[in-house]
Amino acid sequence: MILHRQSRRRGVILTQQGLQKLENAKSESEMNDNFDKRYTREALGFRTGLDPDTIAKVFACEVGVDKKTLKCCFQTFNLQLESDDYQFAKPDFDSQTDIDTLQQRILKAGKMPTLQELLEMSNREIQSANLTVQNCVDWGEAPDVSEFYGRIDELATLEQWIVKDRTRLVTLLGMTGMGKTYLSVKLAQQIQDNFEFVICRSLFPTSPLNDLLADLIGILSNGKETELPASCDRQISRLIYYLQHHRCLLILDGADKILQHCTPKMTCRDGICLHHPNKGGYCQLLRRVGEATHQSCLILTSRVKLHQITPMEGKTRPVRVFPIQGLQVTDIEKLFHSKGTFNGTKDNWNQLVEFYAGNPLVLNRIATTIQQLFNGSITEFLDQKVTVFGTVFNYLDQEFENLSDTAKATIQCMVQHWQPISFCKLRSQIESSVSSQTLLETLEFLQGRSWIEAKAGVFHIQPMLIEYVKSSFVEEKRNHFSAIAFLDQKPQHQVAS
Image (cartoon, rainbow, N blue to C red; front, side, top):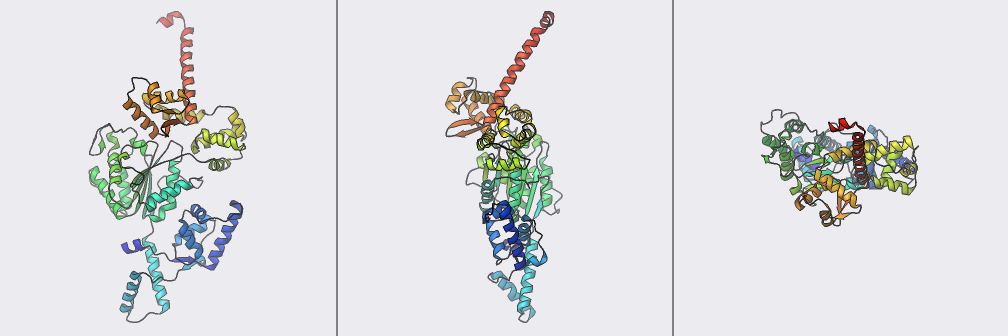
């Protein structure tokens, strides 16, 4: 059984009829969707979610692949794989294991089999091998990512990290709306054939760790392990046992919801945060999955850089952090045009995307406003010079309110300075009551939440966030003066009382 998993023999190729159907559909797609330009292997790999080398094997019709791979190629071009579109590949006798197996069968049979019998034996072995490598996929409540834009380079890098570099723990880090969840699911779809198990789960602030562990272990044990040890430590040990004995891809979406209030200064005992005991052992889970030797990968999505894994991470280490940037202009244009018709100059598009830092969630909401109120005219929308409003303002309000007073004061100081600012300059302008140590910790915190970005020794803030802070400050002053005016209008005896 283990031998089959390691060798992964793949045994079907396209017939001449199947190849012709696929080639015709590909040519039609190239003409209609790719400006009559031929797809590269990389482009076909991205469209199908398959490795470019696998794509080459499919069209060469010489080396056998999984039947599932052929189905994926056909479905990409809206085709149905029929039984006469494929056939078993000729047996490959290069493997010493195959030769030994055939020799044993010949000795057992007591006579030399015919060529037809040899082919039938090989085909049965291929079918058996394919059955043993079928993976178990459980998407949970993962979103539909059929409409996915851009991220080609990001997907390629993450695939390299996970499939080739065998990274054990990867954190996708970015602000709300940057597309962390979509990217994680699209990535998992693209690389799922490399894993025996693919499991995606969304975390909630009230998610007890023992419930999650029971769920994961139940799936990884094929339902055989239902009675788990009482202690959190031993439950995590059971999970790691399965991560070591199987190639698993786990996705935990929204890790910051569980761990955002845990800080390095908080006291932990046996990996459990004493300040937030209901988070029960998540810190320990991340630490042990990152430290233990195993053949699996855990993908986290988070708005906050998790201090629990910071000591383990590094560019060439098995624990890595991948900051998610916004989408490019061409990708945002595709997103907009999926909603309707929009018009604007090249500079308009660039200005719009740059202001909102390519945030797909925010820009998707802005697209609705432009469509409904300005008939799709990006130029007219930008002429209003009102860019932070409604749901965008509310969502930033929630983010800002979660910041400490020191973090808010730091952000406001940076906004008032207008230009990117160095630490020394910021130190000279911030309140003297804020120590240098606290300021350093605050800047690390803000960078971890994507509110600021460090480039060449100076700190930057996104234009959207600058506009939000300025608007909030104006609104705060307006409310303050309104309150004073209201007091002035009251009768004197009411004011005195």
